[in-house]
Length: 188
Image 1: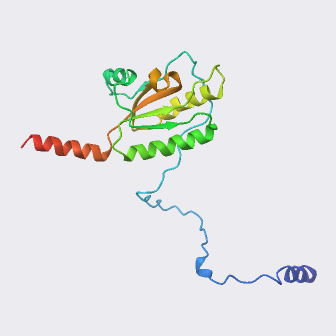
Image 2 (image 1 turned 180 degrees about the vertical axis):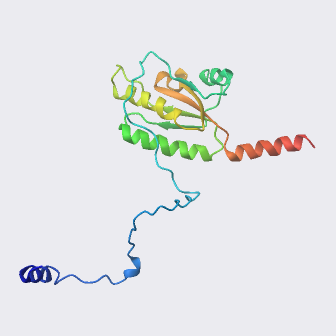
Image 3 (image 1 turned 90 degrees about the vertical axis):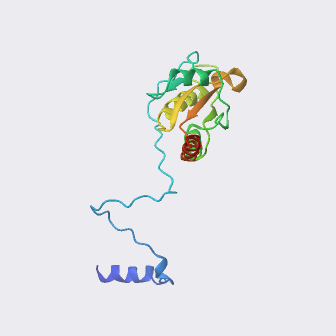
C-alpha cells in the first residue's frame, strides 16, 4: 500500500467499532477430508424431489403405480376406494415449487404417523399443458421417489377423480410395533 492508500483505508475504517461479544461469532472452516458427522434424528432431510424435464401424462391416462413386491390386490382395493382416507393435501392452484415443498413436508409428517392412506388433490386441468396437469404429472413422479409410498392411483369421483390420487404408505414404526405386540399376545 502506498501512503495515500493507507490514509484512505484509515479514514474509511475510522467509525468501525470492534464486536462487543466475539464469542457469538462463528467462523466457517474449510471442509476437511474427515467423514461427516451423523445427522441428528430430528434433522429435516434435504428435499430430493426432482424438477427436471418432465413428460406430461395425458389427461385420459389415469395415474397408477405400485412398488415391486406389492400385490395387485392392494392396488385394486386402493383404486376402488376401499381404504379409508386418513389425511389429505390440497395442491390446487399453487406454484410448482410450492407444491414440491408442501408434498415433501407432508410426506415426511405422514411417514412418522400411523397413517396408511392419504389423498393428494392436484387438479387435472382442461387441456394437456394446463398448470394442473403439469402438477399432476410431477406429483406422479414425486410420489414414486418416496421409499415409503407403496402404491398410488387416481381417486374415485367422490374424492376428486382424475384431479386427485390415493396413496398407500408403508406402516410406520409405531404401527409395526403394535402389530408385533398384538401377534405376540395371540401366541400366548
